[in-house]
View 1 (cartoon, rainbow, N blue to C red):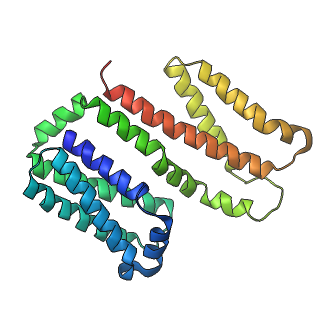
View 2: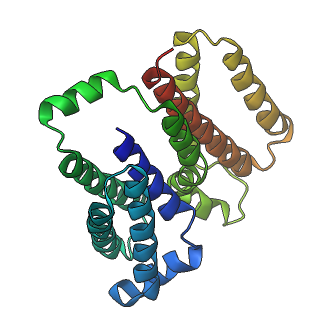
Length: 242
């Protein structure tokens, strides 16, 4: 579990904190000829090797498996070049995580039975798990929300004062899911947060119907952001023993 968490932490740091936007644009524009593609892979090699060294995998093993992760990362990012959709982003991240899982299984010699046992227990190390949770809800969550809201962002840029179409429906979906979740975990004060948030953003619309699209856009982004943070937090709480 320690090897897996360290490699995941290294991946998210390399993908979302040590990759400038200019590199992403360069990779999408030039594909296999992009210098950023190679720079990014070198960073992942360094981070993966460091993570494996910290996990006491051995110097040679750390370098070999670090190279494997860097190579698979290069191939996956090359395949994603030019694709900006939410589905492409999710598939890209799942492919990276699959490569990390493969390294973990091969390096640690984990059997299917052991994987099942670890999945059932999901205990230790608590500190690394919490750190990973914070890393995910910061930059990766921001990029995911931007992908989700990309279509609405284009509509908002038209400058016409009207609704975003199905944004209201999605706000309702997220709001109801969060409300039900608050009830299931006994956090009824969270319902007050939702009511207060909706009241603050909608009071202007009720009086003069001004900037409805901007209001819906802000609410949708806020609720998605809040939902992601809650989901990650609840997963951590469920995994970490009381």
